[in-house]
Each structure stands twice: as C-alpha cells, then as structure tokens.
Amino acid sequence: MFRSMLVRSASPVKQGLLRRGFASESVPDRKVVILGAAGGIGQPLSLLMKLNPLVSSLSLYDIANTPGVAADVGHINTRSQVSGYMGDDNLGKALEGADLVIIPAGVPRKPGMTRDDLFNINAGIVKNLSIAIAKYCPQALVNMISNPVNSTVPIAAEIFKKAGTYDEKKLFGVTTLDVVRAKTFYAGKSNLNVAEVNVPVVGGHAGITILPLFSQASPQANLSDDLIKALTKRTQDGGTEVVEAKAGKGSATLSMAYAGALFADGCLKGLNGVPDVVECSFVQSTITELPFFASKVRLGKNGVEEVLDLGPLSDFEKEGLEALKAELKSSIEKGIKFANQ
Image 1 (cartoon, rainbow, N blue to C red):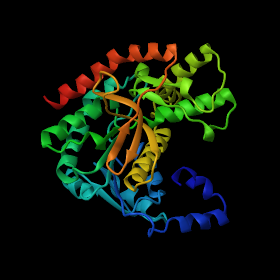
Image 2 (cartoon, rainbow, N blue to C red):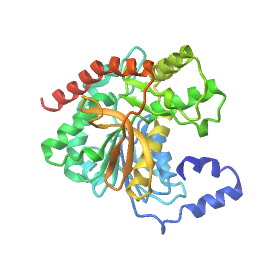
Image 3 (tube, helix red, strand yellow):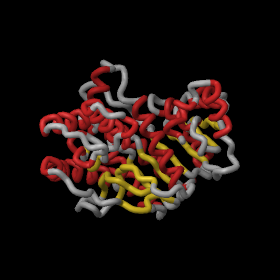
Image 4 (tube, rainbow, N blue to C red):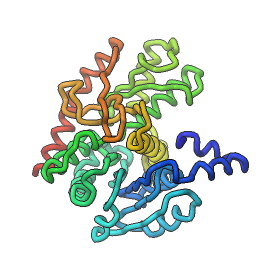
C-alpha cells in the first residue's frame, strides 16, 4: 500500500518486504506523466510516484531541468522506468501512451498573492498542456494540481470539448491537500490517531470555497462550535499559512506533492479495479447547481464511477455551502471564458 510505503522502509527487514512488494507480475503496466516535474511540487511528487509500485513507467516533463530530475529519481531501485523530457518539442513524446497525467506545472504563490493572482500565468500554461493531452493521450486520466484549480479544471474541460475528447469521468481537480490538512488539524485538537481520521472536504480549492465537513468526521469528537469554526478557517487558510511561514521563499510544495501522490494512487487503484476507492475531488457534478464541485467520488476503471452526495450537513456547514457558491461560480466562469478566448 502506497500510504504505508515509507513506514515499511524503516528497517532492513521491512525494506526486504518493500522490495518484494515491487514485483510487477500482479499489477498492470501503468504509465504516469508529470507535467512540471522539475518544479517545487513536481520534484517531490516525482520522488513519491517513483516509490509507488503501481507505476511501471514514469515520464517527467518540464520546460527546463528535467534531465537532472529524471537522472536523480531514476537511480532509485523501484519498479518504474523513468524518462525525462524537456521543452515543447518533446511534450508529445512525454505524453504518448499515458494512463494518468498529473499537472503541477505553473508558478507558485508568493506572499500577498491570492490564487486568483496566479490566474493569468497558470491559465495559459494549463491551456497549452491540455491541448497536448487532447492530441497525444486523450484517454488518460488527468489530475489537475495547477492553481487556481477552481478555474484550471474548467479550462481543461473546455479545451478537451473543443478537441472532441472530453470525458467528464477522467478530469479531476486535486483537492486532497484540503483533506490532508483537515485530518491533521482535527486529529490534533481531538487527540486522535491521525492515521485513523477521515474528514470529507467539499466545494472548491481556494479560501471560503473550501468546506471541511467536520460533522461527518470519523471518529467523531465532541468539539465545540467555536473550535469547529476555527478548524474550518485554518483549513481554508492552510496555503496562506505555509506561504507566510516560508517568508517569500515558496508555497505548499511538500504537502501538496504528498497529497497529489495520494490522489494519484487512488486513481491508479481505481484503474486497476480495486473496489471502494473513495476520494474527494473537484469534478463535473450535478450535486449542486454549479457545473463543477468537489465532493467524495468513487474511483474506478473509467475514472469517476460515482459522484457521491454531500450527506447531512450541520447548520454551520449549510451556511458555508451557500456562502461559497458565488465565488466558486465566478472562478468556474472565469476559466470557461479564458478557454474560449
């Protein structure tokens, strides 16, 4: 299991078990492509995907510095074969035959910068990469990490529609970091083992559009309303917390890479037919009036097998749901408008 892989590698005996776990006979070959592999998220994400035994081919692409990242990661003695590709001329080669494409490409947040400030730069990058995906690997699952996710997922959807390749079951906005943060913060205040905690997070992937459903957390802890509000606010502001702590020298790269690797692992398990793989993700949805929405999704051989209902909400969560809709709607429409310019 990917989630316990690093723990299992802690001792020589467990390292032996880990090595045996990387035999490829029992799982299908899967090619994973990382677009933006030399960046702050891309490098640790490349490392984590190299450690995943479900990956047989790891294709790393960026506009610069990819050969070094590929050579470095490629020396790790795990199942996947690593290839590095650099520059526009090699993008097609990187993508051909992909089962899963992960996109952390783009510029990071800086102090004082909102996710919306990232839009003009990252939207153009995502648009160009989406055009290439539609051409070279239209059947692949696409995991969008590039911010602002609330807009970049609609951009990709519109590009795929124009190319005639759009399949709403295969496009995902990665919101897993919101879930990871909610679990961590909730467990810390509840004195629970964080490995046993689950907290669904719905809505979008920026500010107030992030809505952790602590009323549905498991195990349940009797936290006060004020504490729930504080945990909600901290989850919503988690990215800003890291940007400020890094004091101008970066954003949430390591935790984002971890979250991205977790979600990619879920997608690969779904592709391989593992039952009951459920993760939160920002996908095309009809559970609200908005065309895209993050909620629990059952993953399978075709990508999205089922978008799950929100379930019962507390009064505080109902208020949060209504409060987020206008901003999320605006972000979605901004992405759609950009893609059709």
